[in-house]
Amino acid sequence: MTTFPLVLGLDTFGDVTDDEDGRPLSHAQTIRNLVEEGVLADQVGVDYFGIGEHHTGDFPLSAADVVLGAIAARTTRIRLGSAVTVLSSDDPVRVFQRYSTLNAISSGRAEVILGRGSSIDSFPLFGYDLADYETLFEEKSHLFAELLKGGPVTWRGTTRAALTDQDVVPHVEGPPFPAWIGVGGSPQSVIRAARHGFSLMLAIIGGPPARFAPFSELFQRALEKFGRPALPVGVHSPGHVAATDEQALEEFWPHYLDVFGRVGKARGFAMPTKESFLRETGPHGALYVGSPETVARKIVTNLKLLGATRFDLKYAMGGLSHKALMTNIELYGTDVIPRVRDLM
Image 1 (cartoon, one colour):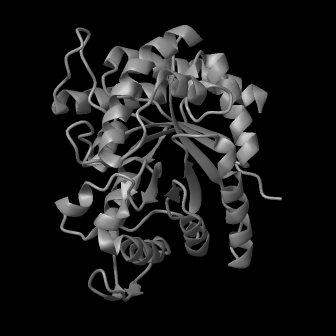
Image 2 (cartoon, rainbow, N blue to C red; image 1 turned 180 degrees about the vertical axis):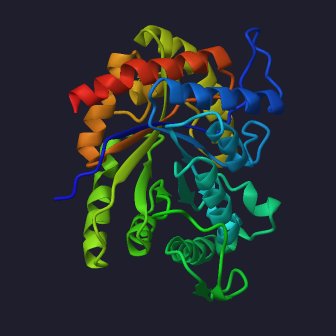
Image 3 (cartoon, rainbow, N blue to C red; image 1 turned 90 degrees about the vertical axis):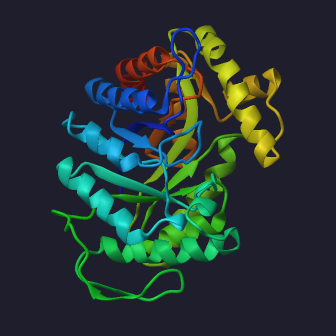
């Protein structure tokens, strides 16, 4: 039986943070702070630091790979990548080139998590029709899988120009950088990940994590069906770590209510209530909010439940201060990660 190393990472969407007086920072300062957060994550022992692509005023990280390059230049150990890259509205060749460049800058520490895009702002921005949502992702993920093989690429589809024996640079030193498919609830995406040989990242942002266990099982069955070797399963979920459970809940709740309230209004989700929030932060919910011990125990429980060997905490939430995020990162690296490793 193949075993994979335990990986404990942090993800962010570059949420706009507030200053100590509760005033939103500029996009530029938010990005500069994000570089400092990535550097701290490296210093305190976090395994992975991921930045998710978004194109809105609340999440101004439209060029995550540039920020990751800045972090790479100031770190030596931590792996760096996306969380996720919206492949449907991008060119797979350019995504490959950007992350192979990051891989060169970081001496082989790059990864990429690809997604169809739960946040669809990039579709109108770059001139794509949402009616082509499925076709775009299927064709582009296939092309990306071909690019990862290395060597000249020949590919034909309907969503971009064909490639014939095309050399794509820069070449990657050694094996290809790891690539994952982010899945939020689509069995078809699980099967696609297995068919193309991508690892599986389960994006669990609400409801009981246990409902994703069948996806892990489906992934393993699909890998066997396609004759592929075993590949790791990861989990991405939101949360916040503070010194005590009470402090973490008090800090996180008002910003969670604000952000998810606005997102819910735009997408037709139910407005969060204090009751629903406490249910999500409880033992059977999707939020990892609490003291290092509380968060560590919940991570261990769900990694075992889901057959996963990687957990990425989506640590930022719009409106939290940079200071609170830095404390979160330090506690996650120095207290949560060692506790998870002990418990596992």
